[in-house]
Amino acid sequence: MRKAELRKTMLQRRRALPAEEVAARSQGIADLFFKHFPLKPGQTVHVFLPIVKNNEVNTWPIIERLRLEQPQVRVVVPVTDAAQNVLTHHHLTEESVLVENAWGIPEPQEAQIVHANEVDLVLIPLLAFDKAGHRVGYGKGFYDRFLADCRPDVVKIGLSLEPPVEEIADPNDFDIPLDYAITPQGVWPNNSQ
Image: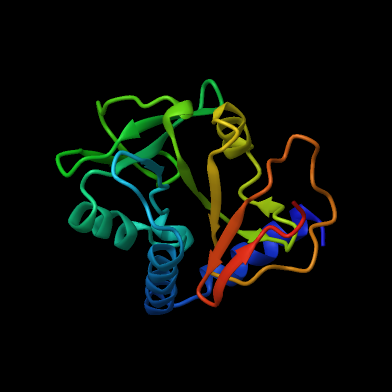
């Protein structure tokens, strides 16, 4: 299936999910993340904050558990710079003041900037992904530009409420594939590597 068609289909499917179902699936994803991806003190994890109106994976269970159990792991979240068409990255603390941007994404205000090359692991929002690690987001390319600035050894993990599709028919040359994806059903490796 092509990206545009997948984007439309998956957005409709996700928006139809009841809030309780999104919460349950998100908790399952969080549990699998901690089971399969142990973190070390001093590591930096980049986590997206969910767009609630779009029924995105709720990443707050991951953030709260990191704060409680692994306070020495730094949590970084994106801020959208629409004028430059890029993401900037900011340290999220318990004191951070969050304000929703025009797309409904909560963003920290006046938080410490963290450079992309400091990130060890990135959690990426997905509308869809395939078994080769290709992914479909909202189509603006923000994560492709961000991932291109990361170190080559950064671990790229997509979070999806749905299992993978068989194949995304039209990946772009600049698309950066996932290393893993976590769904409520399990962890999917990128078997094309």
